[in-house]
Image 1: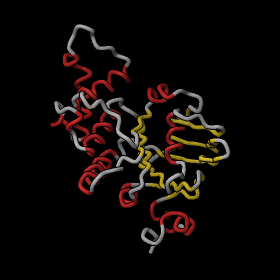
Image 2: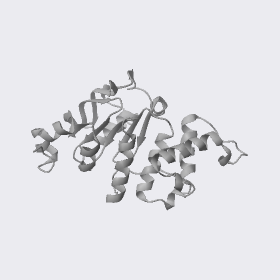
Image 3: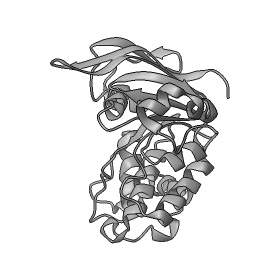
Image 4: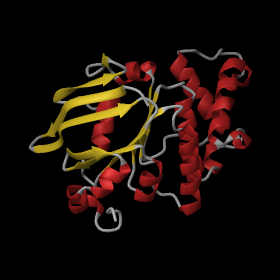
Length: 252
């Protein structure tokens, strides 16, 4: 891992009297998987929304690969290489897996399908889409309508829709939400395969997944980053144990 690919400084967001991001300093290094954890209402999704440009901060700055992107709109950040998945999957259920990913490729490239030409003949876009499906383990489901895929496969499909944009960094908002044990294990293996190839910011409630995958962890409580460090350092933190983790994940 080298220098920071993403950095926030004193990132602040208020909704009326509620402070949901309290001068958050965050640094994600190139090639690392950095997890953000904390209790419900800690401001984790608001943090990602600010990073992607869906929510404007009231104060502070966001830098991506050395460039200040604080004022850039979402689509400009996407074109720079920030790809995001959501807590609730967002796919076209009547489209096949391949069609969903090809559409994402088309949207990112600015390419338009020919009005009188079948989309299946768009060779370059469909090749990219199929490669992304291979990457997430869904190539054999490419002709299956999204409505027939399992919840875990929807998560894989949404990830493929992000990867087809050839991102520099992935922002994953609770990808394990609603999954059973087998699906969670499968997605964990997929994220392990992506580590090092992409810089990843992971917001997640499944602490077993977090401590198994993360290179570093930042803990948010009431909008404030109370600790940031390696999994071992987070386990050893008395403040983190008191505020969130409890006995199970404490060191020793």
